[in-house]
Length: 74
Image 1 (cartoon, rainbow, N blue to C red):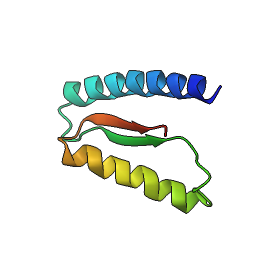
Image 2 (cartoon, one colour):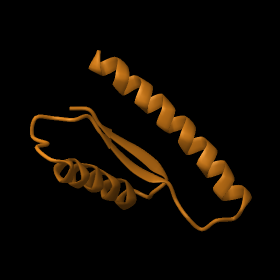
Image 3 (cartoon, rainbow, N blue to C red):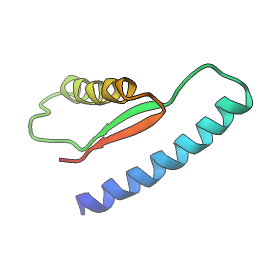
């Protein structure tokens, strides 16, 4: 079941990315869309642990050129 939710999240975020990129281009906004997505793990004892994980993924995206979504469902 967790895999099903992961697929739903991936589809929803990809749709959101397309809408946001279209709006950013239409308004000539100088911003990019870089996001990290995780599935909760036993190692995530606190919300801060989860934030550190997604923050790390976001910076990996930015390091690879921005405007992307990086998923870690491991």
